[in-house]
Length: 429
Ligand code: GAP
Image (cartoon, rainbow, N blue to C red; front, side, top):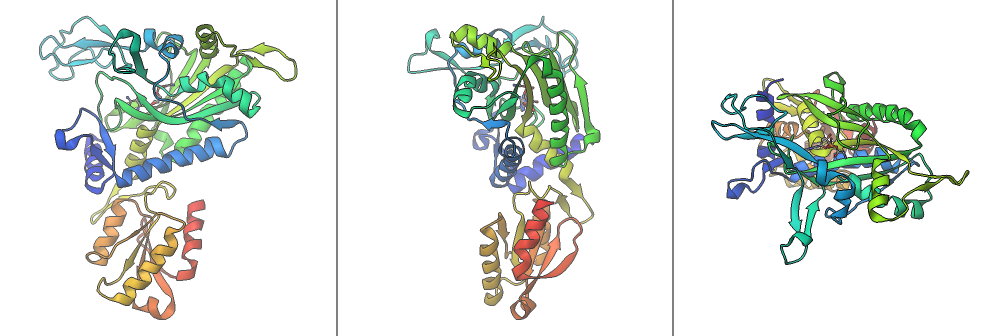
């Protein structure tokens, strides 16, 4: 893979409405991106697939959606105010700033004379209320995890869950990254999907291993090539302040092997500290023995934007004539597109519109009557629509249509009344 591929994807995303540069009409804002009409569908499909797999289809999991701005004491208790930092260095020649761990020479001019590393807290500050005073400082959350710990007691009181069980959340996180970059790989504002899984201390290794396998499973569901995934054990001294064991799932991106997802053993660090700082009892009471203790936590965490990037990278193909996004059916923004063979034949348009309206009740479907059929096919291939359905003169007589497969370009004649069933079957595969 080369950066050439990334450039092609960036261009496709802009051209077809997946992802736009943020604030573009004002010249942009460094590494901020907006998801367009197709991008938001792709991203929602990823999140829905995850929610269905890890929350709705399991008995041991509940979901939550917590505030982006929390009481600042949360970040004292979590250790983020003290520890959530990167070391920043500046090139003495061209004054480019970058993370010390990134390189020992300036990534801009190659100069090796750098300033002494300076610690830089990554949390975004804001003020609550009109007075911009220290007492009113608050922070945009840098991870969704703390909202789950802060609600641990509420969840126990309202759901009667017994350990092992997990809380899941999908939401935005904010980090004042020193050097964002590589399209949607490193953003200052991004989405994450996280699980905090509460277990007895003696079982942490078993559940760490369990979630490791679940994370690999998820990558397969995304259509990711597991040969490009490398599990990297993060050594002592390099892990986040709360973690006793961390594995990064790194992926061979076009710009190098970088973190895609992470799995951490957070011990009882968070619940213990929140109990200390809040004065509330955050222990779990074993219903059988009556014993009270802080459960230990296994935390698998997934970036949504990095997931979308991997999906796009893995799906992009070119042949002589066309660009194809071979998106997994579940993730494709449109599941099918319906075309009347000719836009000026009212009978064809009417029947095509009817099929379109029927299928739309169950799937995201596109309608296109512009240009010639060949161009319409290629246009749908480029945005990953798995099936194109064409209504022609025979359709009026025989009640059947042509259905064309995106990947094989094979066309079949099928009855209009079977279309929904065919799409549903493909959807389940
Ligand atoms: N609660 C644990 C936690 O926040 P993390 O490894 O710092 O762990 C989780 O972040 C995931 O969020 C990462 O594995 C990555 O997929 C994604 N992520 C982290 N920083 C990001 C950034 N600046 N831009 C886009 N995604 C990011």
